[in-house]
Length: 212
Length: 259
Image 1 (cartoon, rainbow over the protein chains, first blue to last red):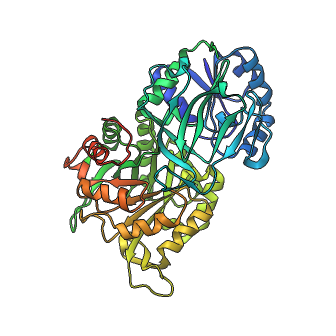
Image 2 (image 1 turned 60 degrees about the horizontal axis):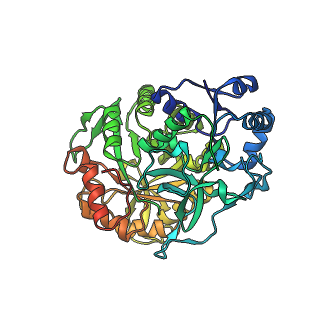
Image 3 (image 1 turned 60 degrees about the vertical axis):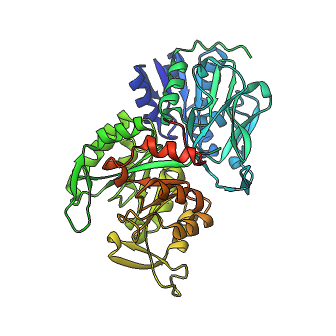
């Protein structure tokens, strides 16, 4: 069983539907014992960091996530779930979970492309990922594949070793980060067509081992 | 680098995709779930549904369509038409849509945008704008006026001011439809698209007027549009999405490679 963590943030059902399509049993839950007894965890999220952290703590999920991380359970963070695993966020000045050391930053404004075109914030739409490290969850993903993003903040791990992939939008920012049994992506694999489903499928069969 | 999005638009009435032909009744052209599935496989970057069902009793038919679409396609899609309040938004989002689009209801009650953004996040809230070119006046200095009811009702609201207000209220995106260009297949209204997109910091989807690939190229290249809405030219098989995206790509427009 795969737990999709429910803390009232974001479109959890789309993650559930994607897993169902792929044939992996899953449940949307905030029950601590259910999450800790599942084989793997998906940690999605849309919204603001401050509120999300508050809601997580309200359900005791901050401790559950830490415990699951320390026991080696494979964890997938998506979007806001790829941000609040760091130490802190510039958004609402929120103190976050600190599973990976680093902080969450806001895109600089104004932002311009290489061709000096003004770029809008949020970064919304399809963009590619430059994989700078191999990771089992990214197996079979091609450089031409694109993924659906919608965000104004992005994760910056303290150690470059935790950056698995980057994306260009005025600046080159970390779009996939990982540490031990935790992998997280700023884009939405559940909304990114075939390559997105491929990532979810890889995660659902990943044993949590990753040599940094 | 971010790709420009190509977005098919499906008008849905009583659970069927339909297309209005000038001065004639709408004709049903297919099952929206099947069509969405087909366009998804063809490389659509997103899909827009407009519910044009007349009676409110039949609204639940659309919710069922949304639910079935959500099981078949794994790209974002939005639903508009008849979204009057937060509860309508919630029903559509819970059924699996990524975004909801509000148009007339936001004109009647602008707080709907901020209330929606607060409840579900800005990324969910699309402002649909129908716009007509008018002589610039004190209330419409941009020379473009927001209209409703397919262009029959003038609101007295300036299009540019409305777009900026929506952005400030928390809209995450604007779908900008030119009533003058809509259905004519003579090209998007470049000046209008450029005016709005150049003056807001949220993405703008250009709508109305696509008749060939040149039109799509022009609006993406010269009008700062972030995405182009297309309907007739793919529904009737004039082009496939694959063809459109490949042609745009070969002419230097960055689109998601799905061919």
